[in-house]
Each structure stands twice: as structure tokens, then as C-alpha cells.
Image (cartoon, rainbow, N blue to C red; front, side):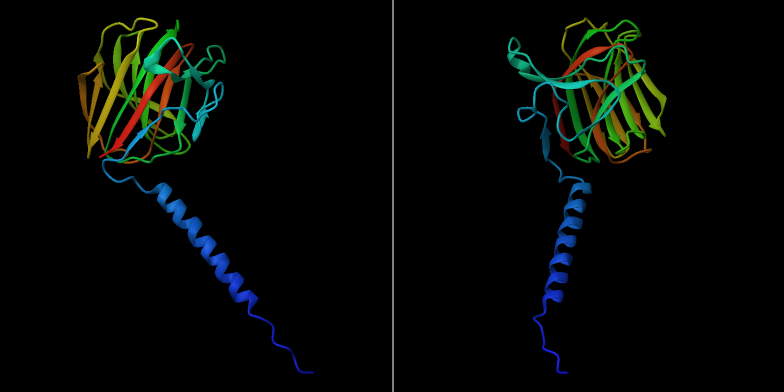
Length: 225
């Protein structure tokens, strides 16, 4: 019996699948690629839903919500960590993008309450599981800036620098910069420490607090360098 030739649907379908797979791989590659130098990311939170955690973020302990403060025009929206009694020592949130290598990074924070160690900090060059990377935090118990690195979820001290006591409800700013292996840390506009470290060279950023601290974060900004 003579077979009737059918249109070449399978090759066309395969082309479509391959094209779709290529597009997906390309999108993933773009997501993992460090942004061009000079590109700035600013978390305005205007598109986020109030009372819920910010978009494109993973929560590693704590209760993180986007809030509005009509009485403070300088910080119309901010991120609050409000959990103070879940028994966890560390409460932190990591954004899934961008992935940064050299960078400038800053955020403002105000500690509202905390008895054990009122603390606020910035995470940077973290892995997606939140177990490896760096942390700089301001401790209200010791009145210090503390530079840490994480290895498999365990925190290690690198350097400490004295700061003025943290007054509850007062906004402060932590700023960071990285150029190759040199990291500089500023607090309220004054450089407090310089660290040389090559453990991690790229990753995401995030926000940190611990114990029973209730804290607000605002004006998170990152620029690729």
C-alpha cells in the first residue's frame, strides 16, 4: 500500500521546542550573569503588596512585610521584620536578584525594640540557599559594626569596629563597597573598616536581624561596579 506523505509537523514542532528551550536557557543565563557596571537597583517597594513579604525574596526566619509610613515622607514604604518570639536566633531575608560581583550597597534601618541584642545588617554575595556569603551588622548590645562570613550556615567573625549607641526609632545607614578583594564598610556616612577577603566573589543581597529585634529597613540600593 502506498503511504501518503504528511506535512512535516514533527520537525516544525521540534524546532519550536528547541527554540523555547534555548530561550529558557538564555533567560536563565541572563539571570545568573552579573549586571553591567553602573547599573543601579533600588527597592522602592511601590509595586509590592502591603502586609506581605517583598517580591523576589526568600525568607530565612522571621516575619518580613512591606509597610507604609505616611508620617515619614522620607520613607513612604519600608520592610519590617516583626517576629520577636519564634525561638530562632537569626532572622534574615535574601533577594533572588541581582547577582553582584563588585558593587556599592546601602540601606537605612531603625531598630524599634529588642532586649537581647538589637541588631540590623546587610547580607551580600550570598548563595541561593542563604548558607554562604557575607554579613555586616550593627549591634546595639556591643555598639559595634561586625563583619562576618558564612560557611555552610555557620557565622564566623572577621572584624569589628566601634560605633555610637543605637537609639531606638532613629534611622541609621550602613554602606558597603567592593572592589576586587577590598571591602569597605561605612556607618552613617563615615568609613569604619576595610577588609580584604576573597572567600566569595559574587552573589545576592539581603537584610538581617536576630533574636527579639523588631526593625525597619528602607532605601535599599545596589549599584554594580
